[in-house]
Length: 497
Image (cartoon, rainbow, N blue to C red; front, side, top):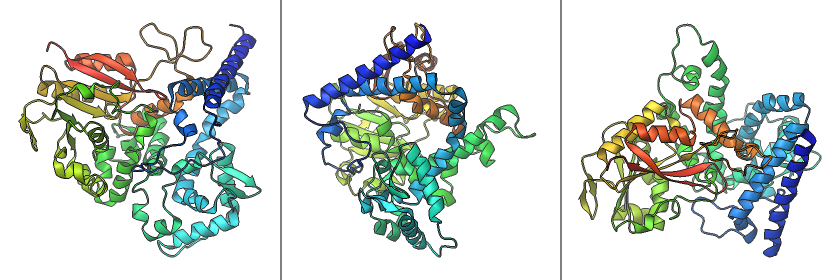
């Protein structure tokens, strides 16, 4: 296709996507949500229903149109922008991460929410930030308003905040995702609990901006010119000069608060999965499982996913397996809001290394001993590990499986950036868009590199998952892609059962 013809094809894709969005929203007599208006706060335990405009964002038609629109705009920008500036945008993107880190750590989203749509001048905002800093002890150096303005203006250039008047900034739709819902006074009184009962997004920022950012900075040196005498497994190990993996490192006593942050931040992973929920029966036929079927949540953290499933499918029972240090956090974080599930024994916790053999049987309150799990649930685990490690995990599950046991893997499946008959593209063959929708889902490829850098793992293609399954005694029996992301729900069945 000639270049100008391709530009016109991208333009047509953009126009068609906007037409689809406009048609759907007009049919409901509502406008598309504005970037300038913060999202109404809905914490992890909130029960309030989203507005019609917000709910429509999760509909399949809008998700498809939006992803095509973002992909086409990104591809069109790359096609027409001066290549030098495109390259510089990529190289200098390292400035955005610490700017977002500052935005979250300074509690600016919560301060600006209290200020309302008119926002705050940086003189006032800097003073309020310093007031919160002072609750942790004397402030040795006041925040200079001009520095604050330059940081926020960079974020405004990327639509992450609004500059409503010269040096006056206000929250927008994106800023509000970092708002924990706490008042500045509450944060000042108890900063350790800032992330409790929030959507978890703000708690992710320190992980990306600290450990992951530092590890990524060591990637090239680790790959091409490592220090003589070093043989570290990952760039994380190289950067921090430790043989511990990042999870063991976070479990050090001095990292207790960071571990809590990461645990809370993991709950935000559900947002990355798009509008599909693991509880849906199109993902897995939960509703057809017999009463008291046992679901083993392998590496289940504090049990957030099992809690969600237990609420949606009350006839099932769940065993959450993880490291003792992680499980110890669960009652503190979940106990107040999910006491009934924990007290009833419908959700229980079991210390278990997923590289070790599974128990010969499972003690389940109200059910007695169960020899085989009905489902092994493996959520956001595979991408943490090398192929040989994943084979060990899946092989242990295969050894413990009964003839009808299934494994449900919740992880991303990355499409290729080129067409290949063995991989399913996300767009029709005649589309001008990249088969993986390019910038629409670029964050998944960012995350792929992050996994490689911090844990030695990776996000996998479909063929890579198929190879893993076959090497471990399983076969893929179903794949359901999430709506609005590259996350997928992959069901494995035992080979030869």
